[in-house]
Image 1 (cartoon, one colour):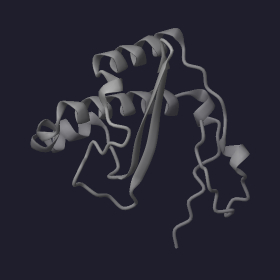
Image 2 (spheres, helix red, strand yellow):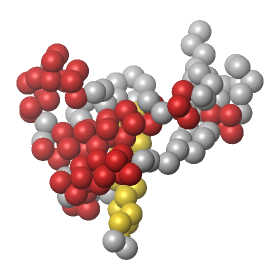
Image 3 (tube, rainbow, N blue to C red):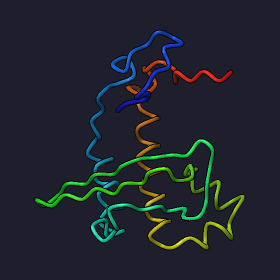
Length: 135
């Protein structure tokens, strides 16, 4: 896990100080595997924007790489709108959420499930705070 790829230097931290390893538990692996197989991950295009036509500032990027049964697939989601949690969309923007394609909703679910697992881990919490300095 990498919390900060390009530290500003404001706190004097290095990339290594924002980097750690985390190993999914068997239950977490099963949960993620179930989502991936239900969504037919390999059917997604290599580059995908689940919130096509939407924007946020700053924009957001992530890559999801899956390897299983000898196959490998990466989905690149670069310079897209920030993906907030599903509960937020369903509560505050239900028409928007249900207007998204099934593929988009499934990818957002996978993204948010992974993010929730990682940022709730003790390994993540032990990393220094984000090195963001806004003047």
